[in-house]
Image: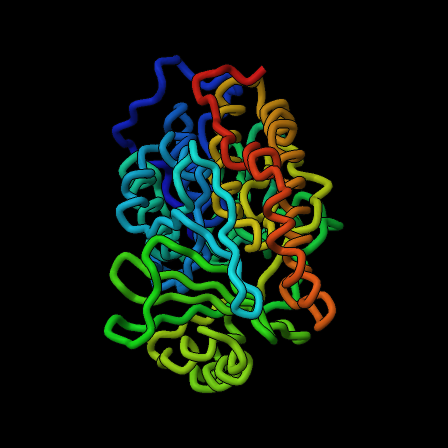
Length: 416
């Protein structure tokens, strides 16, 4: 039986404190997407050595699609020093527009925060991994978690390749299909399928179709919802949410030939402007297939013993919120703060859940409401068309969205 090597020595510049109050010195982080590298980097900042164990056999940046980082998420990234690196790769959405049957309405914005930053998922993964490596985080690939032995003095993780690894705690950052979630609570809920499949297409510059820069449009098409914007490199980018009663995983969706997906997209968006043109001008080489879109119901148990969940493994709001990645980053940082300041791992995990549960569940509920409106029937569409201008005139956007986007983590404040 092979064993993951002991943590290597590395240059570490923790905060000016002797050691974390929790007594935690080492951590295994399961999952190398977004929350995993962020929590590992933050742990190193407070003097806890972390190893990220990733199922994939090697670093992988070919992950398709884009995601939005809200102002609160960008502020959180600033705490680990990668906000400017992300901005350099992102397209800001300084204005957002809603379109229903080609009738448009500009959405209000918060003037005192930065715009949404739209970044490629693969680009974000790469930046976060490189930052973690620079902090001294170790990455192990091809490590599919099978089981965990949780004992008073630490945990031992066992992987499909026969390897074992031990640490003081284990953090499940392994996404919506989390293995750690089920190890913590075999009765834990699984992610719900929203009834929508995600795809993203690109139209190269030079087409007769063009969009205003720094504007993102949310469009309710005749048959399906979509959104579109112009990237900093000039490519016109659009994301499709195709209604589908049949669930398809990422692997299943990517097994379907791109031409078949394009045929379906062109049929679905044929009645829409500019949906029809976007679908017609997207080639097979310029199509990313994302698969089923999920939302996590409330998870009763966030931790047990020396195991705890973070990111999509415990809270994955609908993509309608624009907050999924931002909430994962926030939670990763708050977990590190709690392990820095609380007297032991269990009280740190309890404090972390207390800090995060109400916020993430409130945002998840908002996303579920928005998601249900993505496929309105004829009557609902007509009603939306008539009431949209009045709704946005009367809505107190600052009250509705300010608490979400102005959220900031006071890293230096002790966790009470």
